[in-house]
Length: 126
Image (cartoon, rainbow, N blue to C red; front, top):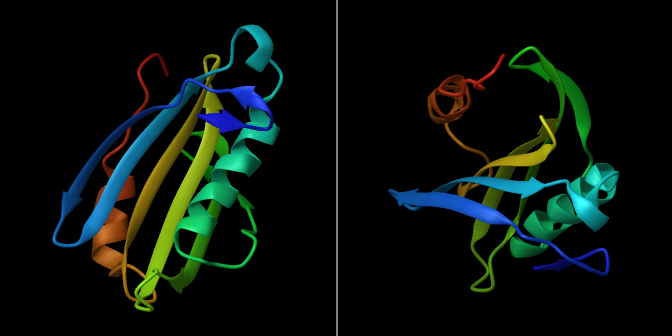
């Protein structure tokens, strides 16, 4: 994937359930990507926003998993004109940039879906 003018080895594990898209992406911050975590995070956030034709994403700092992370919640439209949402968290851990993403139809996810998705995470080595 080409981001910020660099070839970025984004690994994405994803599943689609009842029209919602759940994904975790990772980028190793090594070699020419070392020190590029913030720029890559912002580029990934913009790519998510572009998928649902949303405004420029605004990232908010929160604590999650005992770490500072950046979170965004957006609504926009799909190419067919239907309303869609995206909710993502971005953080660095042990030299890797993580993207935890939930996208789907409607203005926002049901609170219990978001809580279940984000509440199921833990990080090895912490």
